[in-house]
Amino acid sequence: MKKLFILISTVLAICAAQGSEKLNVLVTFNPIYSLVKNVTGDINNTQLLISPNASPHNYQLKPSDVQKIKNADVIFMIDDGFEVFLAKYLQKNRVKAKIVKIIESPDLITLPARKIKILDIAHDHDHDHHDHGHDHSKCHHNIDLHIWTNPLNAQIIVQDIATALSQYDPKHKSDYFKNSQNTINRLRIMDLEIAKILDKRTQQRPFISFHDAYQYLERHYHLINAGTIAGHDFIYGPKTIEELKRSIKEYDVKCVFAEPQFSDYLMQKIAKSTGTKLGYLDIEGGNFGKKVKPEELYFFMMKKNAENIKSCLQN
Image (cartoon, rainbow, N blue to C red):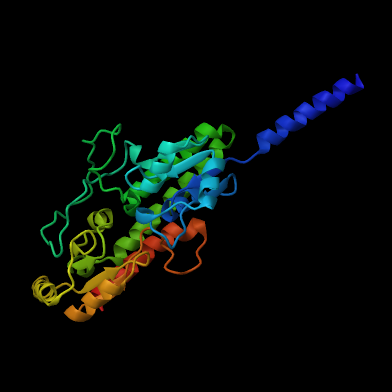
């Protein structure tokens, strides 16, 4: 009888220990990690895969990253076409984790990827719209995947995070949805604050960005991106600079924006040669070299980008 009691106690202890184990949640990059962390709080072991100083576009997995992937129960990513490095790994290796691709949410505001040119003013700057003409079963190569830069999408993402986590950790369902609602309320307030920062005067002044990652931000806050540099066969020579000077003067471009994840050498040269100001935008790492708590990162990033846009375009 005593042995049976010990056996039952041991089994109950093991079950209790297993029940108390935290879910291992892995998130690919910083802004989405911030949103996930707001939902999970201290409920789970939530980790970031990509360093805040790196870009998902050209990231290469390290051995420590591979170990995180192997240990994960749930992995949040945007899409195979965005975190290509992770998609390649998952194609070749079996993992225990449930992969949650955020782009597959049917409620997201999505925009088609655009072929923006250097100093291409003639964009459509209408209000947000939904584009659900794509097939979610296929690669989302025709969609601009920088979806999180629209705060309305951020609210949808937060709701979807809570839903996904509740499926794998139902005992914390009420906590996830409580945290998600609190986060959504903060996102709504942040949206109103940014709208005040990016006022009419700011909306009327075109800028040039390093790469085309800001379409959702531009549409939502009615900004004018005149063109990009990355992705083009840009030859920094006298002829190109003269053409840029003429176009920048014609369109009254006030600012060119570099990004911390990439060398700013070219953008510095362009700013100096054309007499425009140089600013910085960052929607991937988002910390601008400052130590920011994960839960605060998304809010800090969005407001900091808005402040940088206004400062560069108006001063």
